[in-house]
Image (cartoon, rainbow, N blue to C red; front, top):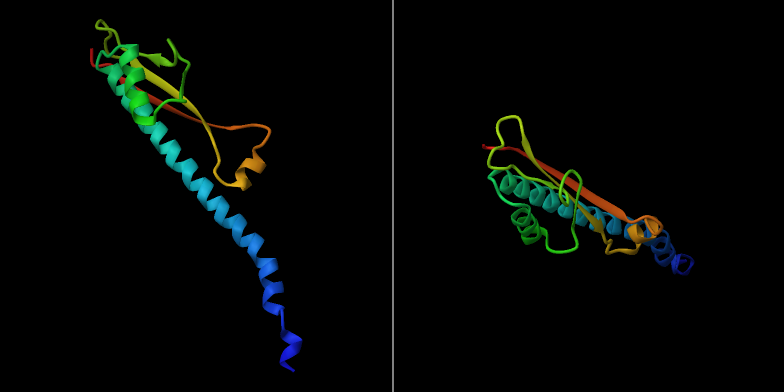
Length: 131
């Protein structure tokens, strides 16, 4: 009688294992995506803070790359994605930093889904000028 159930566990595992792997891969890549977005947001905020404290565009770029490293693009609004406060800036003006990075998935699931268009993470930091 016991022989009729031989191999049932292998068949059940063959059905369940792909679903479990898909869920695991999704958790890994979404966690990495969220972590990189948080890091990019922090870099944009710190860059805007540097710009608001009368920092130069080069100082803002250095601050952003010190947080997220290379491979990040500073985009619109002004010079290379950075709008800093000048010494004569007064109330009502803002230092703005926009940062973008292409996300590289680790697992094959997200790489397969986004194979034609890469995922681009973007963040924006805005701080009021201190004058």
